[in-house]
Image (cartoon, rainbow, N blue to C red; front, side, top):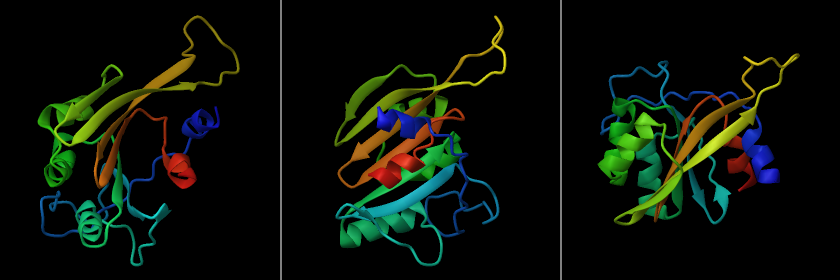
Length: 171
């Protein structure tokens, strides 16, 4: 129950800008431009590694993992195909699963693609109202899609609820 409480905790997604760099990522973006990546970190031996000099790009994080071990956790919020294309290529994500993650409105499921898993979870958030009427929305739903591989965990959120910040900190 406490994990559900953590998942329901509303933390507005703060969008992190990626540094402009060479590689398969959206290099046309300026640093100040918003991106779908809300968090990108390397975890090793049960701890999130500190990054001096600001947030890591997915490419830098994967380089560290390949060099030193651990795994990368990348969190995205409602990415476009273009925003997700470089990450999908870097991690070898299956095109059908990537399409599902970008399009959203999927049923909960678990699928295996080669050496990775793709899962879809529904999120639910109860909306507070001063007065409830027959036209009031009581529940807001969203989705969290997860790509899990040997050295990566990529989450794709759809909807305003379901921030994973509290969950990342607990883990």
